[in-house]
Length: 71
Image (tube, rainbow, N blue to C red; front, side):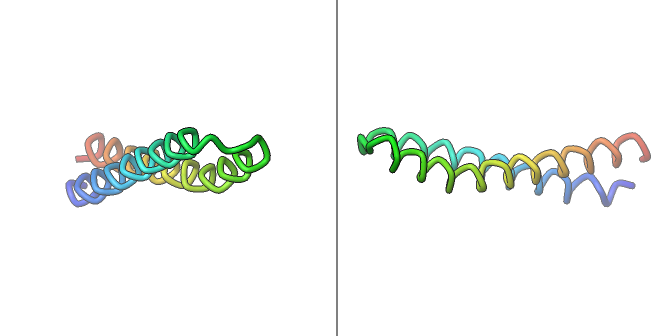
């Protein structure tokens, strides 16, 4: 099951990049000084990226763990 480890690590890395990107977008939105409604709209858009990145990272880590345990 060694073939599962490298793709899992790549998925985890992509998820981590997405999480960092969502954090950067939130910091930029906070620095813009948006009003409450605009900030909520911005957070709603970034939430999809955040949850998708977290899902991708978890799936990648599960692939790595399964590859290590089975190999």
